[in-house]
Structures are given as structure tokens and as C-alpha cells.
Length: 113
Length: 116
Image (cartoon, each protein chain N blue to C red):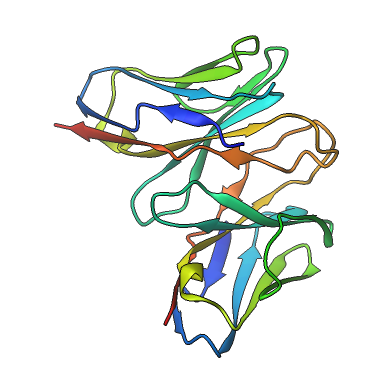
């Protein structure tokens, strides 16, 4: 079952903060975050693993609440380049290959000057 | 070329045609994926290959046939498609697949497919 993202869309002024949430009805082992700009390929942002390990390489941060089966992506001091659609992908750790991600519908973020 | 490339970028085909989508990754990765992205819908995983072996077939209709001749190339062969198959088809790669070890996926720009 796909995770639920909220909000569906958000409009910011440059410099403002935003939080995007990703919730699942299933226990999660990992949560992955990607951003896709219009007409471009999705780009990796973060992986958060059960147990607290976090992998990422951007100024954007995220949290993973295993008990609530929820992850949040924090965008602080937003820049125009942050505009795009943000997807979370979740994995329950049941597949031996570690390959199967189920993606949410995405959150469309628009940052205006 | 760097990263993940896909050809063609746009494809229009009739329901009786046979066509193929090509994906090539220049990252030295061993896992490759096909995704379908339809308007207003989440990314849907279709197929996964790890070291040329198919590890995932997400209940995809047989009119889609994947092929992975080596770790750098992935094809999606299409035949007798339906209009509802029109979508953006994305290819991705990652270093490898290993139980409960996760790696970021690198996506190609996609092929925009229209079935008439």
C-alpha cells in the first residue's frame, strides 16, 4: 500500500520553511526522498533507515519516526531551486532483495521570489 | 555521456506496433529498474535487475518485456500496447541490491510514450 504524503501542494516565498510528511500504514524499514523538477528525472535527496541511520547530501534534512511509521522532510530557508515535486518511497524490509520501493503521490512545492 | 541515459525521449506508437525503449547507465552500477509514471499517480515499479538477473516483476502485463543483456544496458520491449499505457517510463540504476542495504537510485530523463 502506497504511503500518504501531505500536503499535496505548498507555495512558499523564498526564505520560508516547509515540512513535507510521509505516512504509512505498514511498519517501515526505510524511507527514501526524491525531488523531481518539471520535465526532469527524479533526483535522490535522503535515505532514512530504521535504527536512525541517515544518508543524504544536501542542506535538506529529514526525520524518521519508526513508531508512527512516518517521515518528515524539512526544507529550511527555501530557495527558488527547491521548487519541484517531492516523493517519498517506503520499504517494509520484507523483500530479501531490498529493491521494492512504494512511492507516494508526491508533494508539489513552489518557491516564489 | 554520464549518468543514466534513455532513448528515445519521446515515442508515439500505434496499438499494433512493436517498439523498444533503451536505457544505459555509465555509473558502474549493477542494479537497474524500470518505473512507470502516469499523470496524477505515484511512481510504479515495474521490473528490477541485479547483476543481469531479474529480481522483481511487479505484476506487469506481458505486453511489456524487459531485457538486461549486461549491467549497463536495460531494454523494455513493447508490443500491442493499450492507450492507458501512455506514460513516462523511467529507468534507474543503483550500485547493487543487497538485503536491507539501501542505495540511492539514479534516474534517467525518461521516455514519454504515447499509444494511439
